[in-house]
Image 1 (tube, rainbow, N blue to C red):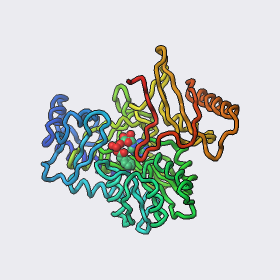
Image 2: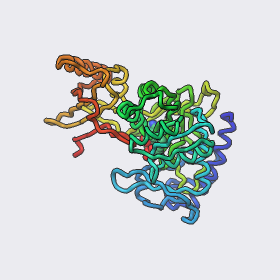
Image 3: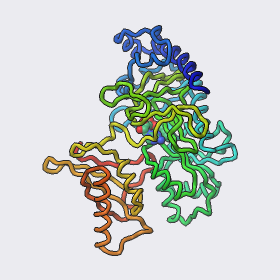
Image 4: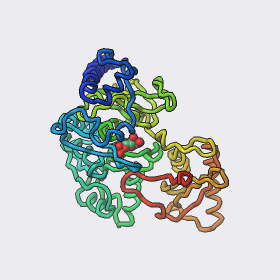
Length: 423
Ligand code: DLL
């Protein structure tokens, strides 16, 4: 679709959406009244800047169903985010929402080259988490054979992958890394498998990690993005060019805003990614601030798709560590480690405050294929990593090399930081 036609479609959908939330969601009616904005003030997609933002706390404050825009009899499915702090954020889908979700997921999977001849092992968690069921419906829509194995039980994952001849693996990148390393331990080799494509997401990961997974599995790896508040997986996905993720902007309208001022930022500049759901019925959201950091690019991709692309997400504004005044994302550490390629990709960051000074320790596992013989070798390697980190991020980091398989593995989203300052 041309950009011009896309804008016409988005404008039509935004007008409808604003009327719908004004009429049916007390929270939005109150917010718009407070700001002096009426539905009739919204005439085109450019008017979106007149509308209020929505934050995760607004969903929590209206827990569980306070922001739903339809009666419960029209809600056919509930999902929720894990809610590590406090109440989970709960979302509801109408039958139309489920159909749209299928559609965007089908587009994502097709973009990754998946078709009805594929056998897809869905190792995202099934349940309240949107990963498993979301990807499942999309895979069925394109006619692929779905293996709904869900997360965990690594041994069985590998056995099914070999026995059923899975050609696609869908899970978090950290679990894909763990599974790859578990192959040899369980007496499997790549020759026993038919895997050719990975659809990885649900957590930040670097381009270096994508290349590492392609190499370890001998597959093509794609990045799938989404969040429960907006829909679940399937908001965006990268194509074979891997130059950003195509956003399904006929359903999810993106903006980038400044992390402090919340003012809209021009294309190409990095800020917080904000989405407005243009077609959702169950829980439509205006300008939801994801806190994910990205940039937008509206040029036509080399693959020919015209949809706006978002830069691969390597961090969230609320995951940013401030160490002795320096801003740091765990992904910057991952980038350096994989660039060096002398350790495994399993790491954990420990932040502490000692004598009022922030300290940062990186524990990273040695690579089994590259074990050190002497203490001197170990010391040299940790010094080398400390030096590389210092020049890349401008911070002194204490590097501790640990034995392979001693850092906890995740079956879903990885935990990479333990910040003891928060205790
Ligand atoms: O993680 C939905 C999902 C499932 C996406 C499976 C992809 C695959 P939530 O649990 O609500 O939903 O978490 C959403 O996870 O705001 C990002 O911070 C992060 N995230 C999701 N996908 C990516 C990705 C699912 N591809 C939050 N890259 C989002 C980086 C991602 N971060």
